[in-house]
Image (tube, rainbow, N blue to C red; front, top):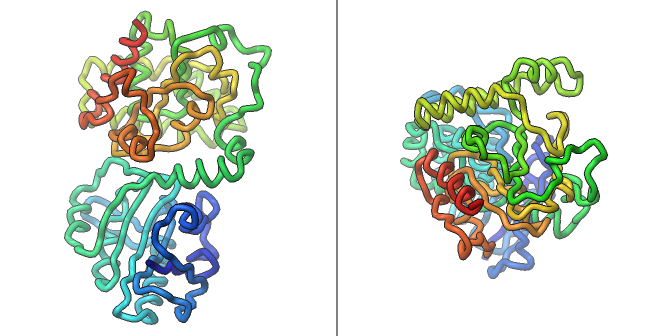
Amino acid sequence: MFDILYRYNGNQFLDLELSQSYMPLEKICQLEKHCEYKFNVVNNLEFENFKYNTCIVPIDYQSTKLSNEGRGKYFGHSDLGNKVEELLEELNKKLMVEKNIIILLYTSTEPFFHDSHLYISKIAKKYPNFKFIVSGSGEVENKLQENFEVLKEQNNVSLISKMWYLDRVHYNTQLLNPNMWQDRHFNNTEKEPPIDTPDYATVPNRFLLTMRNARSHRVLMSTLFENNTKGLNNVRYSRLWSLHPGYLNSIHNDPNTKDEYAYQVELITTAIQDCIRNDIGGKLLADLVKVTYRSPHKLDMKTIAEVGHPPKWLYENIDIALISGGEGTGYGYVDEKQLIPIYYKKPFITFGCKGIYKEMKKLGFDPYDNFWDISYDEENNFFERIYSCYMLVKKLDL
């Protein structure tokens, strides 16, 4: 039994701009339908309405920076970090000491980025009577391990992984408001391809693989496919990134995409750096750079100005969808990409960070492991994980 406490009506901050509209914890988690414990929502810090000894204070920061940190260095709170500490200070002054207070710092839209270890350590040390739970939709690779070691010294901090994104996007938008989900993540109304669509984009094929932005696992997978002389024979395939000078000039000279120019170059160079850091090997790295300088492959999207809502016709006449996850390293990040083939009733093979299938199985999703080997999902090594997925596709192709 627990209370859920908000500073305002279902929200902690009124003047805070987040990537998506704020949604109360009890709605995201569908507590009224599925929670086996009694709970009570307290709005506007009306402490007199408390019913239970345990109180959860949810703060959904949606991957907005809480602080500015470097390796072993702390440069200060962000605006959001200041607001969080103001809230904690107010709670510390007004709440009864004997009450069990849980501060839930979570991001419902992204994985946990491991970028605020020192900040969380500071507030946990300052308020030892509070318990802190830090959570994201999976997590990215932790590149600030020494900062994380500082955080682990705090006995009142726990880190958990939960598929918040599926709760937020799948249930609360698709099931409760189907049209909203369709408008944001796919286009079920476009059942026929445009007249100027080339034949290679519509002929029956065994696999479908579409990739918009460069990420480490995507540039590696694209290299494995494109460097094989027959690699794309049975794949309906696209990638929109390229370092080809002509393509970059077209982005820079187009008023609709000019602002994307620097971002696209940063994404590609970061993806290559991540592959170098993960030691994929000199020969493969050279091939990867060559592929990256080739012109992009286009299917349903003509330019990066398009947001990428896969149309229904794209999933017609294919057997298996190959889904590139949102992150190449880290753990358990599942988002809308894995849901789209389910909506279109296509079996899929997904690749990216470790543990995607493991987390989906926890919620009862069928990963088709009766039909093919998905053990690569548990592989720690970045290259081995992506390469094993590629070899699985080649095996099925035969």
